[in-house]
Length: 362
Image 1 (tube, one colour):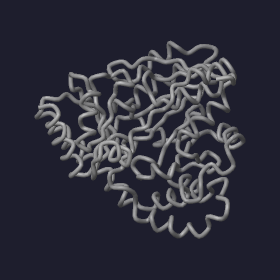
Image 2 (cartoon, one colour):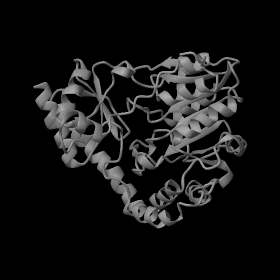
Image 3 (cartoon, one colour):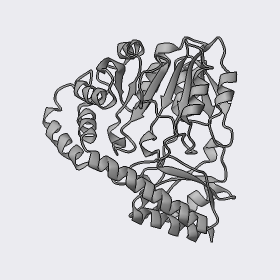
Image 4 (cartoon, one colour):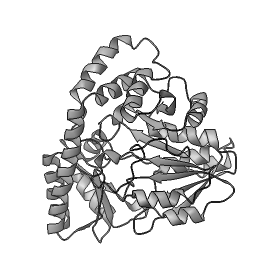
């Protein structure tokens, strides 16, 4: 290539998304494939979303509200914060990138678990920052290890709770102890994409008492429990001074009109939300029971997915299951060569996964 890229950009490993259904069906010449690879909502989204999107279609010749006013006002009421504490984004990835751009100078450091959501590393490198990786301990975030890596150059720390891909969590007591050891000028980004699925009350939830510490930035998404992955809408709740910086640098129309309408409608359907959570919990209970009978070890989880250890090359199993029309996720890219990650689906999808796994393994 004759054009020179920045040194940081040249080291970025592209994000690999899960295979879409259409691609798998086309590649393997199959129909009626099921996808349990991307932690999506198997129930789709609320019927209220469909109606709201249709209603807003007539206005698509107009630019969207730049501030996502209606959405942010509803979020403010839900979490008992002010609107100037909220930044809406094109998925929570958008907020991650804005935080890196807004608070990292070249050479500044951002701490994160290894492995973790690749967009943390990509955003930090794009902002000319330095990602500092801290390996997991027993499939869980190594909080003490993160503290040990804090230096005078540290500006951001990324925490994922529940953790993807392992499903592990951080308790209130663990987070409180960690918080006391982090300098006052370091922003702590708590990514809670799966928090709605948590069943254990001991798990830290930053929005139970929001904005108690100005260092904490909470990230949430509509992609998982609300089923709006294709709309791309997330948000951050944070100190108003941090929010002001992000709003200063974000794209003026970063959340499109249909995404805003969909998110507002989704917030208004508590029945669908509760049903989505129950479906995920019932699915996990079924999968744990079935996999346990097969002698397959699964990691504990507080999310809508689980990791299972096949004690063999999981990528080979993943590829065979693709041919059977069942899409799951090989964890080889995360360094877990014998593990698959599978999210809960409908009853029929969960049964199809177990049937396909038995066919491949036995």
